Image (tube, rainbow, N blue to C red; front, side, top):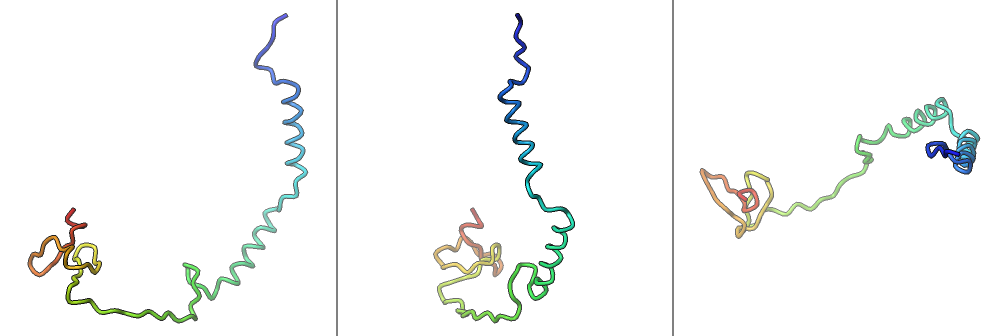
Length: 100
């Protein structure tokens, strides 16, 4: 007697049927309830910026002026220590990382 190795085994077939029945019996939300929840969430987001920050709060940041031994790179615009200066041309200073 020939054996068909492509045929699904009976134990695998039963577990597939049980999985399908479990998925069908699951209490999944319908599309209308999902849309209603999204609309409700939009109402609460009106006081927020696109990034999610609250607009009414104040930011307090202490600004420290650039020191005598520092410069601002004209490529990356970061304030660097003078030991990281790579070159200076026509009044523009570039750091070691940008000159690579």
